[in-house]
Length: 250
Image (cartoon, rainbow, N blue to C red):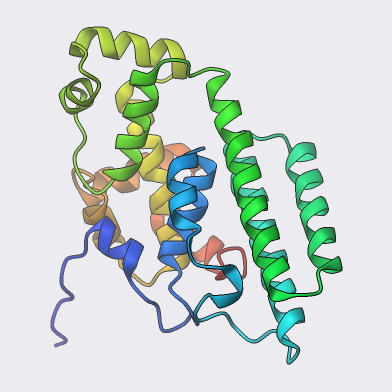
């Protein structure tokens, strides 16, 4: 009987290197999520390594420059899709995608590709930030949303969010609902489910491991809320969405 695998945490998932992919997939997922969340400061901090010097990019062309162009095209397409799922209009997302892919096509040096990559990532992040600010106006709620994204692996409480925003729990709860349209618990659950679906589609972790890594009360609870949200059990969702290219490495 094989020994059970060590219990994972959400943060370990974000930093695990999968043998199936030529470069770590999970940190890339975190990168796309950061763009979708409109976290401009964090995106800037993640753009320190030039794209053309990135380790582990697959070989899609024997021509090094063309290879970078292909990878930038994949990255741009994925960023566009993540931003659409976060509320950016399809017309805006695809217009930006077309623009940056055309720029890449005309690029003649690896350094140009890196510059286009960074400009594209920041542009999408700024659009998502502007989209969020259309409804989220207070610093307290923005702080809470960032905290939620960074602590999905834990049980996040209203009291913890009120504490990091220096507000009373009742007042913060009303403010959060007013600005996001969700109760605190509804918002946290929706973000945990988004991450769980990414893990189901792009990793080999068991359903129990994913449930535990995102601090769901139990595997049965995770199964029930996922089925209520999308009409599929975790197993059914995984079978239908098993990584077939959408979650390919940038």
